[in-house]
Length: 61
Image 1 (cartoon, rainbow, N blue to C red):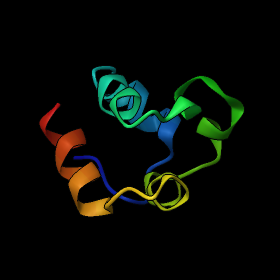
Image 2: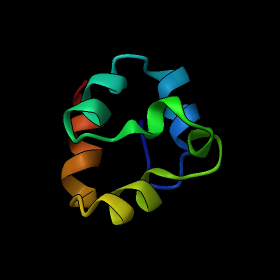
Image 3: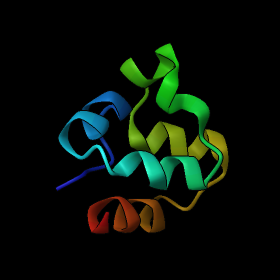
Image 4: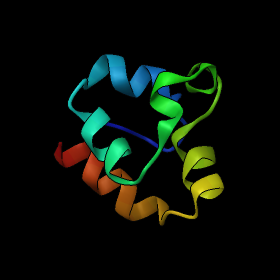
């Protein structure tokens, strides 16, 4: 299960298909160094994305 506290890189490793969800929001962080530090919650906040919606989509991917 993907949670708000997981780092982007950990989400991508656990669920590679989640890259499509991140890309769908225009989140280029999947290919940058921030992916190793930024959590799902932080990324959602920075990109103005509803956290609950993002988490639901990541868990469905």
